Structure formats: structure tokens, C-alpha cells
Image (cartoon, rainbow, N blue to C red):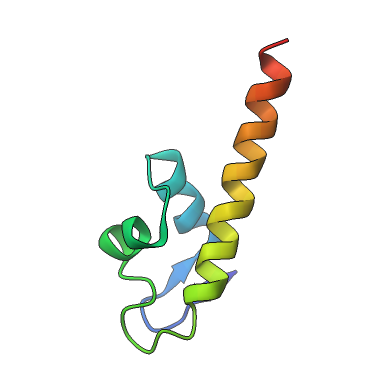
Length: 65
């Protein structure tokens, strides 16, 4: 699903950036230019990033047992 139409950034792009170390909106902006054009996608990009990071945390918690 497209998160940032201006820069053709998808949720998969954001998940990949998180997997590669992005952990805040400014990192996404640096890597993907998300939110730098009209800014309408900033909240959606941040939410997508937060959800993916939470899933990673949950998986790590399960694997640590």
C-alpha cells in the first residue's frame, strides 16, 4: 500500500527501512524522502514504522524464551 504518493513510498519500503535500522521519522525522511513534499503522509509513515517496530519487539520477546 502506498504511504507517500509524492515519492512512491510503500509500507514495504518503510518496513525494509526499519529492518535496516530506521527508528524515527527523521530516519525515514533521510532514507525515503517520506513526508518531505506535502507532508500529508507523515502520520501514516510514523504509524507504519511504529507498528512494524512493535511487531519486531514482540517477535524478539517470543524468541528470547
